[in-house]
Length: 132
Image (cartoon, rainbow, N blue to C red; front, side):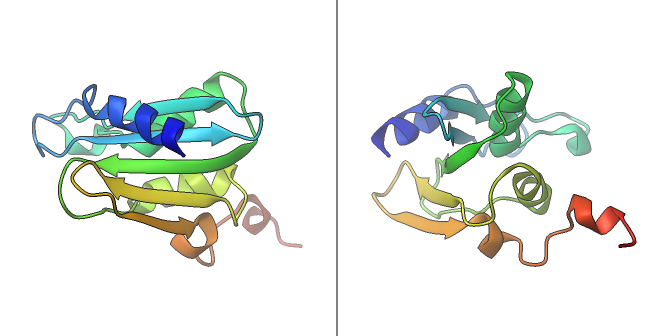
């Protein structure tokens, strides 16, 4: 847990958030014990912004990873945040439903634990693309 938090916290400093001023860091643990981290990267065209958790996930996927064990998300404000809907959908595509997601902030020691399934019940999945 400490390694995940350290990796995610480091990403807060890498975040590019000139519009929201809301840096977020994420660290994704593979089932093999590797950590992939990411930060939010904003764009003047807001729809092109990428969240920290998707940056970490896409980096891991691009490296060939497909099996994930945990995700930690940290922000720099007092209130803990949860992933947006787009991130929840991406997580449901690549992560086991019961995979833990840990939420925290660098301003408190509070740590909230949830799962992919709890974050997105009834997720749209590949099985929904077929009529059988």
